Length: 113
Length: 112
Image (cartoon, rainbow over all chains, first blue to last red; front, side, top):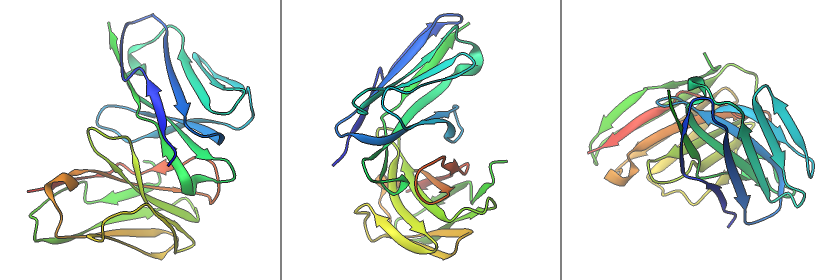
């Protein structure tokens, strides 16, 4: 079945440093979604990318969808303590929607003040 | 306030008990989901319902029994669980197809 891997599993950064997490799928995706889960919280939707090579920005966050639609990345510029949490990517296989949404393994970000 | 409410938030049960988790969404969505989140695994999709009909069952053991009486309510009935079933159970809703999932705050289940 479809597998979605994320690296790194953990990332510790000094406040103000940049952070990147990478997401790789074993199959071509119809779309990729990103979620953030704060410690003790539930996943919260950040963004969805649909087109090959798509790049979207939300303030200090930049999301990319690979040309082959099998990988994606999330980059945070100048991290802040509010960025702490686990970031998940989630993708559906081609021709499928959320009924076959597979979540990645997640990257847990901690910030050193 | 996420628009998706789960009860109870915490549940401790023995292996012979029968209990149920409840989820209610106030967002007018037509699809609801149960996910399992355990410490060493990624979020696992358990069940998907569209307009009260089960669409997907990802090979979940029969000791987990879902029920969707209408598009706003979703239950997960639990019986004769195992300690390895201890996890955070998350309910989510969305419009059918692709697009944002709205998660509830989860029900933390401990099986003794």
